[in-house]
Image 1 (spheres, rainbow, N blue to C red):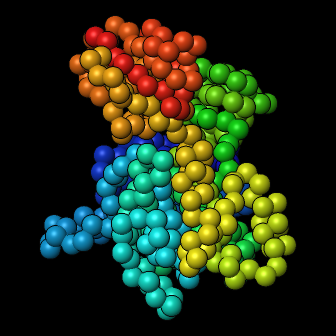
Image 2 (tube, rainbow, N blue to C red):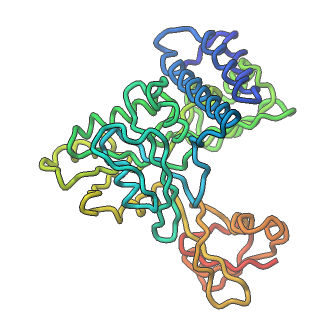
Image 3 (cartoon, rainbow, N blue to C red):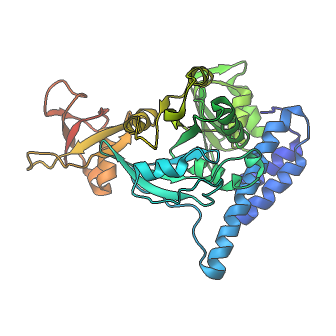
Length: 387
């Protein structure tokens, strides 16, 4: 991302941040794009802005269709414990995988581009309910609005994670690179960044910068000056990990969004040369690779396990004080969740009045140990809340 945008472009970006509806935001983005100079340093930024413009146009079209005729909803509302999007090129077997894992019955055909709208289904694995969304096929140019690109990028941005589905009968690296590059152009990365930067804009207080890590080749004053240059005079900036000034500016500009991913290689029953798999694993060593066959069922049990680990989830069971056994359905939370978060998930009154909890499981030394609100839970814990 560039660190040398002209003042005009920075001022126009503030209008993007202040836009209140899709129509206003679309206009602001178009004006911002016109103010961004065209050179090598801004290529990625311009591509990401064009992707956002294309996605907003699609959203506006959907809203219009609902008003005039109650058209079909393009983007399914979130259900279950986590939403995961199936992304792949045409013919990779997205519909077959959805059919195998969920209650959905999508059309499965040998002709290309069978799926043209998102298709949802519920996949239950080890107590966790994953809402799988089959996206239309990704093609070259998707990031800039070609074919179903705006739908795919919007789905992925809204989801908790991604399954990148590849066809073992075709060039694996070529498929993976196409998908990763189109998502990257749209501001979506599959590789966990070194820095996490959270920006909260407020009414007063100036620019407050909190660093829980390290600033690389810059100081807190440099960060403050950067925000001042964008006329963002009152905000709280929390930086975790190692971040450069370019990383901070990328966050100001909407930046890249990290989405945890699992690579699923389908049709392994047709694979004759395993060297292609070895090359794929080397190229995407930061993502787990699972081999499956939707035809024979081989490897499908591993999908849920990989998603659970990749999405950093834990299962916590709740128990009433007068009951001997916990509820059979767990609460699914992010790793690092506390007793307070369990209470909040159950009821706001309970969260407010919570006095303590008793916990059975791997996070405590003794069964039924008494703990406070900030106790960090582990997968498989049973929690009894007391107010």
